[in-house]
Image (cartoon, rainbow, N blue to C red; front, top):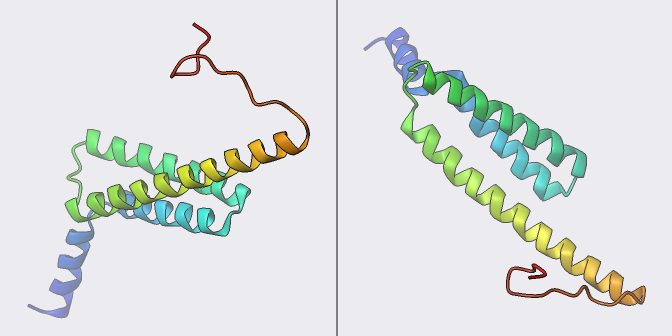
Length: 117
């Protein structure tokens, strides 16, 4: 196998660049979440959604998805969802503390799902 063959093999393993773009966009979202930069989170999430739509279109066109990249994207996206949820819980907690300090009573909630009836 020559050097040219190696580059062809690695290009075939990488597959369609839209899949690598999806992984990169999720990594950018994780970095934005870690930096706690709201504008960066918004931009990175929009880029992730666009990359996901591009991957969906590629699969619909019959492009074979590289399993390794899809698994990596799935794992990274699960991590991003957990981090986003953890931040949301923290913010909700801080808002409840601020409401209490401002003298606002706790919201009345009826039923397990928070509906009135």
